[in-house]
Image 1 (cartoon, rainbow, N blue to C red):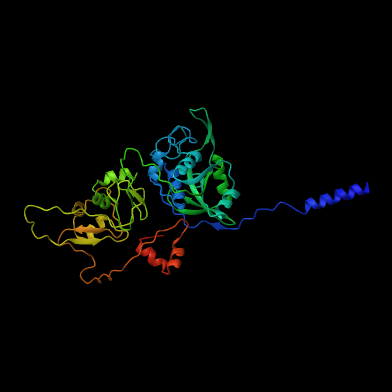
Image 2 (cartoon, helix red, strand yellow):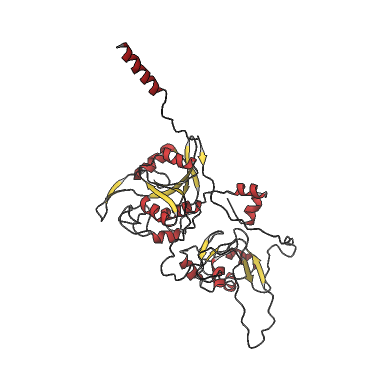
Amino acid sequence: MKKMFLISLVVIVFIGAAPLPNETLPDYAFVEGLVGHGQTWPLSCESRSAADLAGYWGASVSETVFFEQLPKSDNPEAGFVGSVFGAWGQTPPNPYGVHAPPIAKLLREYGVNAKAHKGFTVKDIKREIAAGRPVMVWVIGRVWSGTPQTYLAKDGSEVIVAAYEHSMIAYGYDLGAIYLLDAGSGSRAAFSYDNFRTSWRVLGNLAVTATGFTNVDPEVPANTGNLKEKYIVQPGDYLSKLADAWGISWQDLAAINGITYPYAIFPGQVLFTGGGAGNSETSDEVSTPAPAPTNVPQPTPTPEPTPIPEVTYQVKQGEHLVQISQELEVDWKEIASLNNLVYPYLLYAGQELLLPSGSVVDSRGEDSEPEPAERAYQLYTVQAGEHLMQIARELEISWKEIAELNNLVS
C-alpha cells in the first residue's frame, strides 16, 4: 500500500507542475491607420463600416457599390432588409439593415479574408485589436441598451432583431473602455465595457473580423459596359472636372462608380473611367496618377477674336459658392455657369474657378502678398496600416506640412 501511495503522489505532483499557459493580452492596444467616413444613406451603416474595414486592408471598396451588390431579403442574416432610404429604428420586414454573414461573404468577394461571428466576446475583440486587426460590431444606436425581438422570416428562419440596429468598428481598448469608429458620422468615441456589452449582446454579439487581403479585381457593376480603365483621384480633383476631361457627363461618371449625393470624391479613391483614360481599354491595372487629359482644340474655318485672358480664383478650405460670389461681387449663378457647376454646387479646397473678366480675384485687394514660388512635389502611396506621423518620420518631413499640402483636416 505504501508503494502504491508514493506512485500516486508522484503522478499528482507531475501533473500539477505543468499547468496550461494562460493567454496574456496587453492592458491597452490601438489599431493605427483605420480611416472612417460617415455613411451616405440613412440605413447604409453596415456598407460604410465594411468599406472602411476593407480600406484598412488595402481593398478599394465603394460604400454605394458595396450596398448595391448586397443580396436583398426580408431576413437580415441573408441580405439587406427594406429600403436604404427608410427611417432608422424599425424592425423587419420594414426597412432595417443587414447582419454579419452577408457582409463577410461580400467582403470575401472583394478579396478581404473576412469571417462572420455570433457569440463573440470582448476578449476575442481585444485579441484581434492587439494583433492589429479592427473588428466590425453590431450595436444598438450609439451604444444604447435595446430589446431583442424574434422575427419569423419568409424562409422560415427565426432571427433575433432589434430597433436601431447599427454598426461600428472596434479599433482600440484600454483598462476602462473600448474605442469604436461610428459609421453614422465617421467619428470615434470611447465606451465603458458595461455599456458596450449591454448594447452588443442585444443582437447576439455579432462581429466581422478580417485577417488580410488577397488582391482581386471585383466584378464591375452591371450595365456599365467596358469600365476596366481606372484612375486614382488626386488632390484637387472633383467629379465634373474628371468627367469633362474623359468626355462623359458627371452624372454618368457618378452612376458608373456608385457615387451619390453629395457626389464627393477623395484623394486615393479609385474610379472607373468608362474607358476614357489610361493606355489600354482592357487594362486591369490602376492608371498611374497623372493630371486629367485635356481635349485637343479643333481648328475653325474663320479666325477667332483675341481671347480675353482668363481670370481664376483658387478655392480655400471651407469656402462655398455663395460666399465667394459675395466676396468677389459676382453673381454666383454666373460663376456656376462658367465652371459647369450643378446642384449641389460643391467646391473643394484648391479647386480653380473661372471668373468673369474684370472680377475682383481676391477679396484682400491689390495689396495681398504674392504667391510663394512653385515647389516640386513627390507622390507617395499610403500603405495599409500607415499613419501620418509614421510617414512623416520615414520621409523626414513635418507631418503638418504633409497635412496642409494634401488638405487633410482633423
